[in-house]
Length: 234
Ligand code: TMP
Image 1: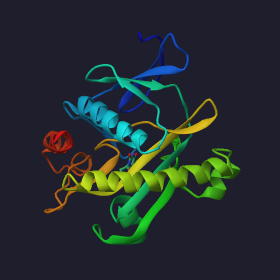
Image 2: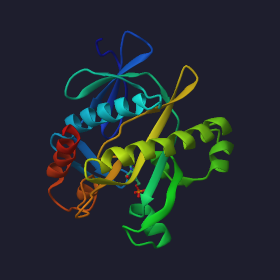
Image 3: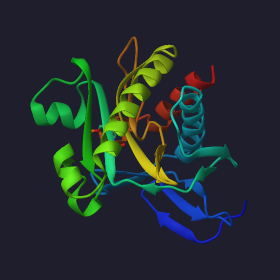
Image 4: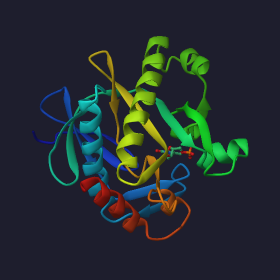
């Protein structure tokens, strides 16, 4: 399958059409941004790790009944995926308080939540991806009621599967962001699952092993991505 026209270039990936209208090629870059593009940098080798890690995660989720866009790895930086139309919702699941949850609600980072929470952001860079509730998402026509309910069900199932998977590798899954798309009318998991889109803490030391090292200038960014990949390959 060859790359045709570029459909879309995001902050961390490029998406290309192929000769098959149902299949796209995703190319993962080393570019990193934070705070809606205000902070920019490079995390060397990130594109390779995020591509391979997403492939592993999508395969694991498919095996456990979650439909995803993943078709196959092409090379270090590229994967073949089903050509979805992305729903403009960022779906965030949280197990432990961190990041914007801690800031918005004044809860110390690291506090275990009594149950996993699901929230939506409106995927819109011009507006800075604002937090949005179900009623607003419906009113804006971002998704139907059935799609929203299905997305929440999938998100919580994915959380259970990922929490177990990472705990077996000595990693605490703090929170993560998912994106879903429509393929032939069906909601399926899309985008990526990587240290860019998840918070991972070492189970014993709580060391941050994700993009927060870049966002917060903590150093050893590349090492953290590699450490996660090493634990997945074990
Ligand atoms: P937050 O605490 O900043 O809202 O982030 C929640 C999770 O979502 C965290 O695992 C990082 C991920 N995330 C993204 O994937 N993309 C984004 O643009 C943001 C802000 C967060």
